[in-house]
Image (tube, rainbow over all chains, first blue to last red):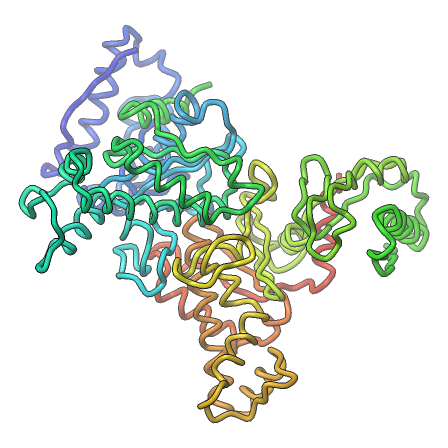
Length: 287
Length: 287
């Protein structure tokens, strides 16, 4: 096994980004002691939206230069290997179900709590894409149809309540005068700071975790009522808060989940960290 | 092709129900001029919840006597043919995708608006069951997490807003004094009566369709963000209201759906009526 790692030269344009990805692949092969010509295939996990069927990047928020780039084709030309491109959140789910938290189940959802709420879904061992690659947009199930507008165009999506960003925003809003009694300050407010405060007994910080977990549980009820998975793994920074987030999430799921389903669902931490996406992409092209 | 039709003798207990189903199968074969021994298989669409993997009925609300009945096994013994049992809403979706509204798409959702909101889902041509047969509970996606308790155990489910029952209940509530100006009366209030009033220009009745379609559109946004189907077919009595229900549903979907998906989604009437479920069940055992 070898690894290559390079910063994405977004400012230099699409050609530079494609070249850098190809260089990483060459470096990983070299490090792994394998000739590139002997590599069975190359799997790519990329920020979306993208078209996984054609391997075309559509409009990733943080890489505008990649809009419309036919990444699969370009890399196949450059590396003379078969390439598959998929969404990074899908890849993390696919990796976790292969070798991580979900390795013993066939129906599995991975929910990543970060800037947004992303995810991927494996049903009966198959990665789910839907008709144009937009299945399992787990952050975009409605929690409150009169809630705030979401960048996705919907209102009151799970992402508006349970992402790390949403948790910090909601905490800051609550701290406006007359604010609650808390050791938190609005400067440098992060989920980590809220976690540390909660651990030192700050009741307001504890309440913010309770509330975020409650919203997450509400969203998971909807997701499970559609997908009927048997396991939901939580990944990303917020998931690192352990029981602070898992306990209210699980409790809410038990309060609201369908009888006959809720007893079976396990809500667990993801197991593979940043490697999940790499392993999922490898699985795309594994024999 | 032959048909057999008999009332379900619920009051006489499970043995009588199983015998009646077997009689219907024999009658249909006879009518179709086929010896039962030459029938390739028998597909059953039953009210759920049930276990489609084992063919066991779990706890159908209107057939308490069938609780726990191993229907597949019992019918296989009685008829000496291979039998598969699935949920009636799944069967309607499977039939519609085979020979009805969804015959040209591979990613298809069928939503039936009746006493509740039921449905079934075909992804990439496969009927989706999930890990214990509870996938595609389309009526049980959250619309408002602070909404009324749903019989499923969740709060504010789509079913609480967009079923025919919910529409009648909401209409009756609005008519309480000081009620709106309307030709409707609280006696004999049905979706049909509301439809007739709307067609005769009753603005209040029109508003009730507008609102029901809006809730339905909100629910469909969530469903599509998870399933990424390319078509949603509406079935059941409410769907017969045509543009009165389709227009606000489609408009809400366009208002809230994800760009890149919403342009592609078609929301259409189901095409097969009561035959959808029969055809879906036949498809279960079609070669």
